[in-house]
Length: 177
Image (cartoon, rainbow, N blue to C red; front, side, top):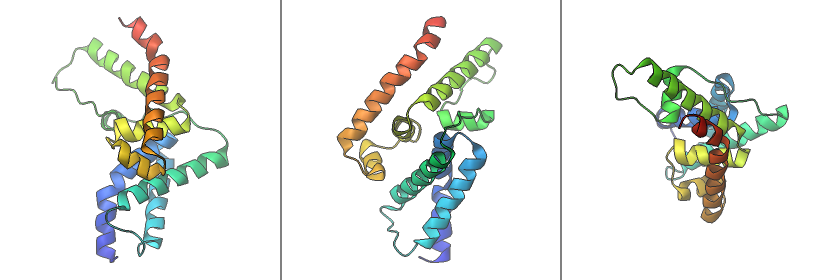
């Protein structure tokens, strides 16, 4: 792979890799470091990368680097709130109102914070699958390929993650009905 092709690859995938690592690690600086480390490893393996599987390879590499970092720390930090534009991108929610009412802004922020917090409380395997599926829009087949798991296992993990999220968010929904 030429340097120009590699730079195209970085440009095409860096946002998704960063978003994925941010959700797994919950820290912008760590996510930036792991994203950079992922592309360093990709450069080292550029001769082995295939265009059809490069996205899966990058996501799996980033995920492994994240897990290694978390294992070294022996604890998981809660996801940081981040700035407003970052949360908007991560939650895939864009308001179509030009001037929302103040109470709508507060409710929307509470919802984001609650969902963000609930995702951070999921076990790592569930958080990984739910992030890839719901936030990154990957298919079960793509997730299975990245995680090297049967598609049925990925679907089961997603089901259990959604169930756990409903349990975690139930108090929030009851208070706002």
